[in-house]
Length: 275
Length: 322
Image (cartoon, rainbow over all chains, first blue to last red; front, side, top):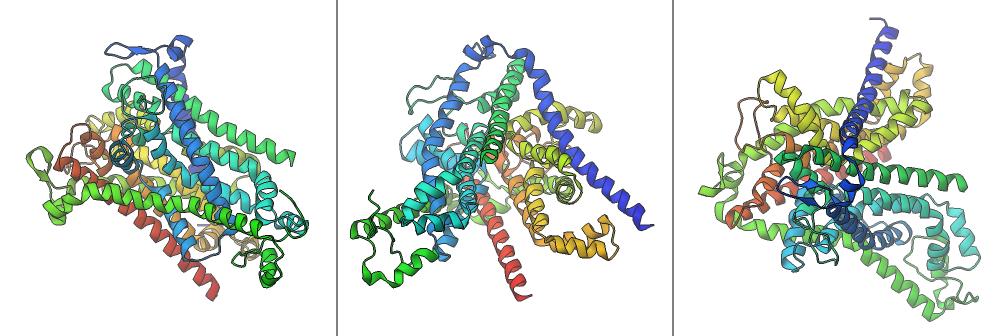
């Protein structure tokens, strides 16, 4: 076969691979959108589910999801950002840093079901926090930690060296340089990382099912239990009792996640333009 | 905070930063006040503590999941547990071989379908796509990674399962449906990492290949893919980890029958799905067995991460020796 014919065939196959990826994404999104859109109404969003078939709305599940996500974000963001500051600014390559990086990579790849059982064993049972927002948020924060750490470290490393030199040249200490020069410069990308990790937490099912419980409840204090949207969708879909509500929940969940992802992209683009 | 001249240089001799390195040599000159020095040191250790939370997390997972799961290895025995062909926990049979088999079957099929798709997409993104097309495909891949697994499961249950059912004269719950849905889910993991590997190849290598008269495909297949080999293998290993650990999406489409099926369109169960199925009612040794399965999953995922690190180390020592 002529080499240019081979070339054309091979390149078309690569186009096809990329095409399939894009088509699959649009298929999933449009499937959920088309079937879910007719379910969405203020009544669906703001009322409680009732009856054996969970008719009515999904309000408590939305509140539970938002509650636990915000709580997890508040727990993980400071720790992860400071951890990344250490790795990017202070750490000297060595066994300790190698161990921290290996641990972070391992945490990033822990199957979510393992994280769920871990949360159950440590926070729900051993620490006595029961099925609660706090247990779920703590378990989720271990899941989010490596994501925020990696994003922050990359953001800090992308800050040019000469800005730091300028700061040292003016007589600033290391901490002054980090806190007033480096972190503000890296802030847009750090926030993007936090938003993406938060989106991940919103979509998580296996972790929260064993740490938050499944009871439909409107959480008020961090020690209240609840049922997040993902678990609600899972229960509705698997029991097949109320498919319209499942479609509606799936759409709300999808909109929330896409909102987080697109929001992060928009934010980053705007911030990088301004610089 | 005062910025007096004495305050100006943090003396941290162990820091990697060239600026403060110089002050380390002049430590005896006391360029920095004692209070500032202590404060800087305290902050540094606070940050180290934060970084150490990651290590603590891994240790805690091992401790808490491991302690709960350990008795199954001690009392049932690793051979009967891992190799036993009968998972009937209600009558005291704790063999998880059918579940390990299920995990392996579901993972391998997903890799076979997903890897060409993902690597193809990665090559497309780094070598072929115009900036405009890339601007569509790349965000699509990233959004694909963001969609929650329960929505993939929902999609698989209601769209893919009926299609498989019609083609196979069955219910559609089985390994095949799992393959299809997992193949989609591992595409973003493999594609983004492979693309990074391809993009890190210097442009000079591409130009040299084109200058020899090679076509785009010859350049990709003879030059770029071999050069990015280790990076692509890393990507596939991490995709493998994602496939083994995936829970909800697989749970919703594989049918969850803990035995070795005769065909790939019959219901099957994996380690992850069986944990979710049994957790609501498991007690005693049954529950211990589930934690034992979780510790195996954790061990496998850590092992894969270690393998990737080993390969990258190999790669960099090879580069250094060149």
